[in-house]
Amino acid sequence: MRQVTVTEHLLLHQTKSPAATGQFTALLYDLILAAKIISKSVNKAGLLDVLGGTGQVNVQGEHVQKLDEYANRVLIHRMERTGVLCAMASEENADLIRVPERFETGDYILIFDPLDGSSNIDVNINVGTIFSILKRKPGASGSKDVTLGDVLQSGVEQVAAGYFLYGPSTMLVYSSGQGVHGFTLDPSVGEFLLSHPDIRYPEQGRIYSVNESYWHYWDEPTREVVNYFKGPDNPLGKPYSLRYVGSLVADFHRNLFYGGIFMYPMDYRLPEKPQGKLRLMCEASPLAFLAEQAGGRATDGTKRILDIVPGELHQRVPLFIGSAGDVDAVEAIYRRHS
Ligand code: AHM
Ligand code: MG
Image 1 (spheres, rainbow, N blue to C red):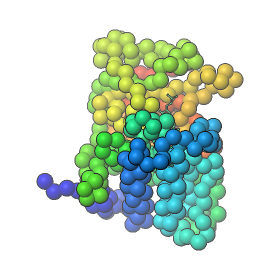
Image 2 (spheres, rainbow, N blue to C red; image 1 turned 30 degrees about the vertical axis):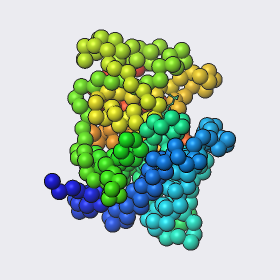
Image 3 (tube, protein in one colour; image 1 turned 60 degrees about the vertical axis):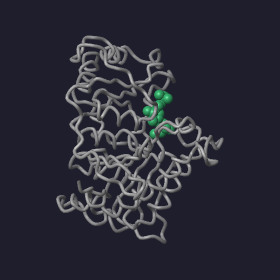
């Protein structure tokens, strides 16, 4: 059978979508190149002196792993040279990353989590790069002075979103609004080949993914939500299986194929400041875009993730994402309690 490369697939979709331009294809091409470079280093993580933390703490107050920093540097270095971006935002950088004066700019905005699940690197468990692509609103284009206001767009405005999963094989799963497509990196030729066209969630979920050790920090509705999936009184008629890797991108990926729900609810670890952990712009929104494109849903418990307008770059949000029926059930429970 003839193999379709990711570039061929992009070009095909570009002709189908009037909104897509050669610039968009160029952006994805460079992003793919950056991911190949990161993938190579992730594969060698146990061999190189890249394991372990740097001893520094990032803007989220978490310890920075060396490979996170490396992935972040690779992405910024590659992507500021594409000529099609006006700004970037990374989970690892407190502020907006503007494209330096000396490079060409365009209308696209790239938001990314360079290495999601980085606490798993040291133990050789899947990690990934999550990305979200936005476009600067017409009128603002042309000027180099991109503002935070240009970037703080709701997820529904995304032009494309996806992730690279560095696992037994490296995969790219992405959507530009015409379904979700999966590509697997063939290391022998260095190409991503179409391996999973038109990915759709199975109708019936069977897996729930949540860090249940936070039970004591959850409110009553959240406990009821988790009990719903682990008890027999759900449409499956028996407890869902619990699977939790602790790399969002890996947990999301598995549930996309097997059906079910990933949850990172709000909790009261900080009693004075209840919050979820995951970031709206670089984690929840891009995955919500994919989930909806695959026939699933994503909510914060009451609101559709893609409708939330961010107030700040590193805003956190509770996340329930997966098969549509499972996310509906979560919302129904929260609604009953409200
Ligand atoms: P990271 O982006 O710093 O790796 O943090 C996000 C990760 C997610 O991948 C994962 O779902 C979550 O943190 C796990 O958190 P916890 O250890 O609280 O369950
Ligand atoms: Mg992350």
